[in-house]
Length: 70
Image (tube, rainbow, N blue to C red):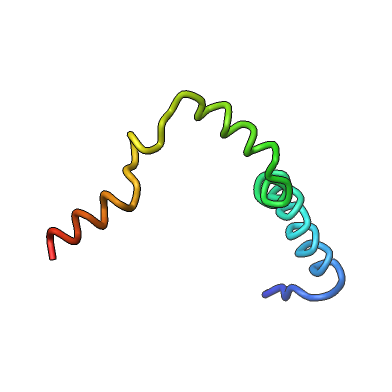
């Protein structure tokens, strides 16, 4: 005997699952994108003392290399 999924109970089950997933993802994905000030402060603290140009050269170096290559 095959049971079909229909009715308000199935709708409540699916809605509950979707709601649970949404409530779980909100503080992980949505809230940081809406309020970036906290993450910018953390990034500024962790990058203190690191010179980005030493790690990743600017575009001038890249274009100069391509210009000589072509």
